[in-house]
Length: 395
Image (cartoon, rainbow, N blue to C red; front, top):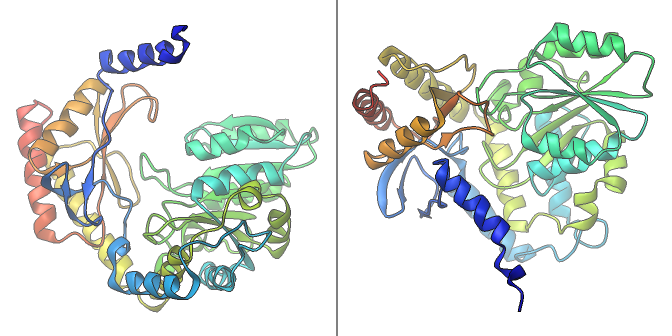
C-alpha cells in the first residue's frame, strides 16, 4: 500500500511550526467562561475571552436557553428556507433591529458566516470591493468568494481610500467599501464618519464588520454606527452574537431590501441549519438586558480604563487602542510566545498573537478585559505582568 495516507506533506508543515516556535496545543477550559477559570487543570485569571459583558454564564441567559429548549427542542431541524425558520428566529431579528435602530436584521449562524454569505451575495462581476488592509480574516475570505474585483487601502488611511475611489470612479457598476468597526488586534476604531462621507461623495456603499463594537461602543452597546450617529448611512452592519452577547451567531443590520435579497442568496442560510433554539432564546434575553440598562457596558469601560492605565504606567507598549481590547506589544515572535507562556505559568491566561495574524515583528499578547473582572483580579494580573516583564527584560 502506498504511503499517500501518511499525509507526509502535512507532517513536514507541522514540524516547521515546531521549528519556528509557533506550534501549540489547544488549551482546555474546565467549566464556564468567567474572569477566573480552570485552564489545563490550573486556576488562572482569564484575559483572553471575547465575553466582554460577562454574559456567557449569566443566570438570566441560561434560564432563557432552558425555556427555549423545553418549548422548541435542541435543534431547528432544517435550514431557514425549508422548515427551520421558527417564530423565535423571527422574534430575534425584530428585537435586534430595534436594538440596532435599523429597518431590518438577518441572522446568520456565526459572524464568519455573515461575511462569507453577505459579501458574495451583494457584489458580482463588474463591481469593486475596497477593503481596509487590516480587515478580519472572514472579510478576506468573504471577498474571495465574490466575483467582483478587489483592492485594498492602507489601514484607516482616508487619502488612500479617496485615491482608489477617484481612480475607479467610472470603471465599475457598484463599489463596496468594507471596514472593521473596531480592529480586533489593535483595538482602534475605524474613522467611520470620514469613510461614509467619501462613500457618499463617490457613490459607493459602506459595509462595517462591527464584531468588536457590538455591545461595547454606542448607547447601551449599540455599536460603532450608533457611536458616530451614522444610522441610515451605513448599508451593511455586521454584528456578532458570540462576543459581548456571549452566545453564538452573527447578523447583518440594514434595509429590508438587504434582508429580502439575503434570504434568497445568503448561502450559509440556504445550506446550513439555523441557530439552535437555546442560543436564540438566550440571545433575545441578552439584547433585552442590554436595552434595559447600561450597567454592563459601564462596568466594562471602567475596568478597561483601570487596566490600561496600570499596564501603561508600568512601561508596556499598549499601542493606540480606543476600546477595551488592550494589546501589549512585545515585538519578536518567539519572545511574544515565551511571554504568554510565562504569564500562564504565573496565573494569567492571555494568548500570544503573532504573524501571520499580525505583521512580522509586532507580536503581542492581547488582553481582553471584561465587565466580569473585579479590580482585585485586575490588580493581581498587573502584578504578574510586572513580574514576568522584569524577569524577561521587557520592562
